[in-house]
Image 1 (cartoon, rainbow, N blue to C red):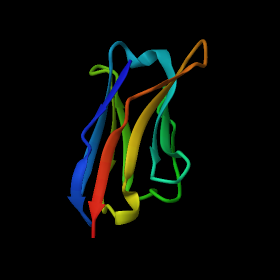
Image 2: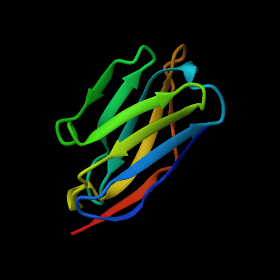
Image 3: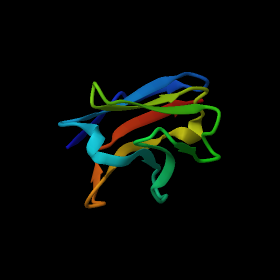
Length: 115
């Protein structure tokens, strides 16, 4: 089970850090990532990090968002800087099981960026 937190209301240009706490070890996930879904839009992948530390970022957030994982704390993070009103969305964390390839989702946390 994944539990996302850290969302909130922030002004444009501000920062937030999202957390995704797993109920058990996150080493069971071959890759973990952050997605977001804005009203009326499809869920989009923002970035991911594999178990060996390989990272991917979507162009929309490259240079502004940073993903990290703390295996000891069983937590995935998303540091978001230079936030823009277009970043307003519900943010979800995801983990893909290393053996079954089943996807596990957090419940989502709302991020609202005011102009």
